Image 1 (cartoon, rainbow over the protein chains, first blue to last red):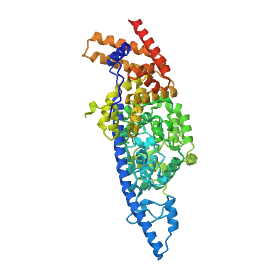
Image 2 (image 1 turned 180 degrees about the vertical axis):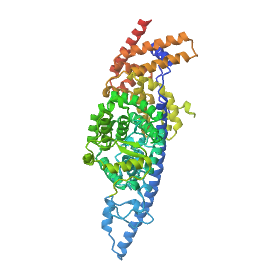
Image 3 (image 1 turned 90 degrees about the vertical axis):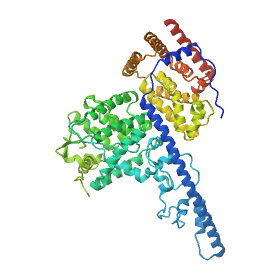
Image 4 (image 1 turned 180 degrees about the horizontal axis):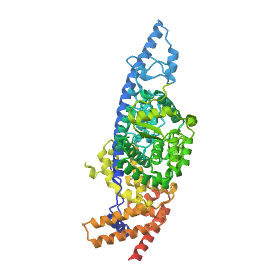
Length: 432
Length: 190
């Protein structure tokens, strides 16, 4: 191709002086920025290749489906000619015409010409023939024709969330995403930050493990989170949290494209470093210097972000970005008074659904305890002699009532999850 | 054809076809110019880093649909300009003393460690640059941006008009005033 011509005019004296002086300036974008951009570029190509492969796979199914449909038409014609066995020809034709005929089912080796919506179990898993939500969002325009998956399996992840995500499309099934998200939500325990409360960890929503450096850490965290196996150790709590997380996501408006993707990426990186360090924290030991150092670093940047932009919104950084910002704020040292200052905003965000009620409870309780008052929702516990002891709580007899008013699980279930998540031990929560 | 000889547009098309090395080449070519444009427009390194990512993320995202209807440089600087304007509109102006100190400190350290030029020459260049940048900061943002688009992006007046969504005459006027004031500032110093 012919290259578009650059501006050929020689630089004038002022421009030349500017460039000469600038050449002495060795200021550069940070290495992190360069790494993030190059990682994004590589991931985008990988995602594109995956989408292309998936589309090719779909094309094969489509071809097979076309053959099946042609066979169907032939069969109908044959029956029409011989009129030996009555078939639902008109109904089937109407379904095909209305686009309700599921070609993937028709092309299945076990297919018996099922119609979509018939209630029959699909013989082809959706993931085998279509990329997950992330791939669908990322991929170029589909080749056309009907899609195997219905709109019901769309997660509320924003397009940008999904594009950042380093999760292979096959792992982004609704079932997988739901399990991961709810499991992580279940683990929204008291974060560290105080030497007297080691071991209390909180998982960041892994709905959006970002570019490589993030994805690696997120995988570690995810493995840890899933290893806790809440469903087995605290089944009642797991069920409730899963339902609550699903309900919340359904009420969260979808975000087409975040307005501050770089800030989102940065928040996720900071939250990831926070979580990775805390995962290495021995619950029986005081806060290690590694965690303190990361908290100090994150605090400096968080203060700058809050000063410049306020508390980020979901439109700016996605739901996971808001969650990451919350996590960082939750872990700032007490002496900064930052949590107290921003708590009203956190309350507003929880009301609007951008943050979970668990997030609000955790920050409210920590803020109250920091100011020398008893906590309200029982979310803060001390780890002592191998057991969690709930820190001073106002009106303990009605604790579960207050938790219920906020949509939280009972305290016993919460402690069950806390033990299970932190210690990997089955708790003693309610099993009803 | 080696990547080094490819035009920006060819590199972009190669990247769109899946060649990550082409992107690396493209990025290296434009990293510094774009970053300086952003940094000197917003006056804050942390913000510049963030906007820099935004711009390149947008370029990456748009790659599959890229059509070389204009120079890559014009397109990239238009994206950068839009991010800068968005930031000016959405954020209250913040001058981070820490950031300035950090940049200044790093600058002095680099000067001290740099051995390729005479120390006196280095200091004079640094002082001149500081003075020039200081003079640029005094310009209205539209004029500063117009000058930076020309000086860093090598954009023509027509391209500046397109990038900033103003008429040719407006862009020309902004550029003329910016250049006039900068020249005056440099003459006063001389």
